[in-house]
Image (cartoon, rainbow, N blue to C red; front, side):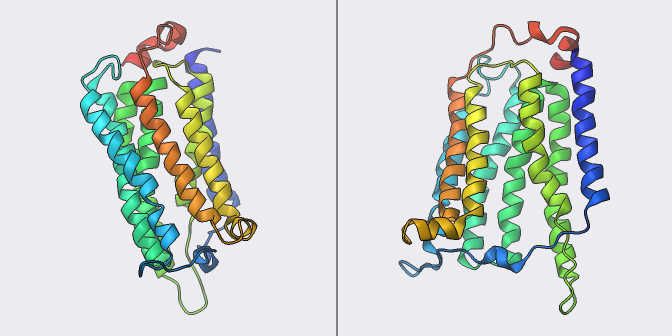
Length: 278
């Protein structure tokens, strides 16, 4: 299958996902039960201490990542073009912002404080999607689409909270569909891109480890109360979510630190060579 055929199939998957999301599903509200976390214990005067403090798992690798990218963007073994570093700035800046946004949210969990958490998350999500496209498909288009992705991600959160604010009485009109698409569609597209298009850099295992960490973190989030009970109130699933997803960010730090130019990446692109290097 040629590069162009794979690219058309990838775009088709994205279009189908968008059509299915808005054509088959009604508006999805943010249920207030989402804020009912298992571990609400207060320590050192801080409410929900474990869920607040565990955001250090985002701050530390985020700062390390920013420092590493800043020191490496001119290294042609790390970034063939300096512009390729830009999505990684978003990834790690998003992690730093998430540490504060999520911490702020967990001090007093509600739909309004959740905005800070989700705005920060979309910065990181769009950075990851941007660097994957730049490395596997086209540097030029990865960088051109990056501000579009970022604007769409931020708008998805603004749109969600705006629709929530339209609620009247017991009628809830919130709509999470666009935000859900922004969060979950990249989780479908990124593995497809990794499998279908050759790597320009080595150490790809760290990208897979980061994806696996995020998937595991979502499972911990889902089983928040069950894990809290299973561990006899030592650790909640949501706290584990922070720790494991923070580990995923650290895997991206290791990806930048250990990767080198792949000796076969460009040769494997075939007819897509000009697109990929454009």
